[in-house]
Length: 313
Image (tube, rainbow, N blue to C red; front, side, top):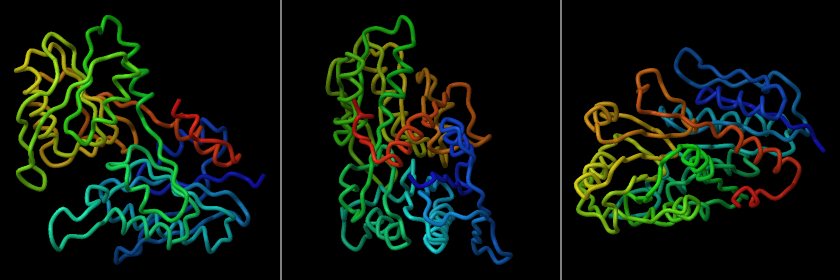
């Protein structure tokens, strides 16, 4: 078995370090900085010839810098004769443009898949893609993990929380919501909303019984939080008791913090550390759960050529 090496860029070094601690190995020695004009400079400071390399780098804000860092680290690893290079992308950016929903627009999710492949990735490990069909954009193996068990374990530890209903913020998220509802033995509801702009939606009404129940809104990402606020307001109007949100990727940009401050009805926003929570985004009602254990287990299974699908049981 060739030696396992894990590298990290500047996007989320803490997550990479926690993964290494779980696997009881040292983080790989790599320098990632910039030339004076802003170009990214990468240098691998150890021999990785014939090694099994995993590069941990979510393409979170700033997405362009983090994506280019990832591509350049992959290229450097390829030219250093790594036997296999796995791009570990906990948050896969540019995923919201996954189809042509109007004329003359790009499909950036496919473009990024092509870039990762051409750069030299042997395979990709990611989590909670914005749309499942993005897996089909890759011509290399892709392992798609889900944070559902991380969240479910958290909610199961909350004593006295009964009469649960899992809420999907839109029709597209029903499959994810059903997975939560099954594991929590809860009912299912859907927020019927319509999009009135590229980043603006309007909640219309709730499909399902939520009156007198503790609601858990589940989604793959939160950006400005406007959709979440509307969903919370709609649930409270329908008679929900406490409202929680379990969202895999906390992008949290723009007016996200203002929206969260205004939304007093939201008991707690639970996110993962797929994206590092910046100091300005820390909030008493934001709880961060780590996915280091999940990624560490997937990485060691890939390294040992074992099944990753058993992680979904």
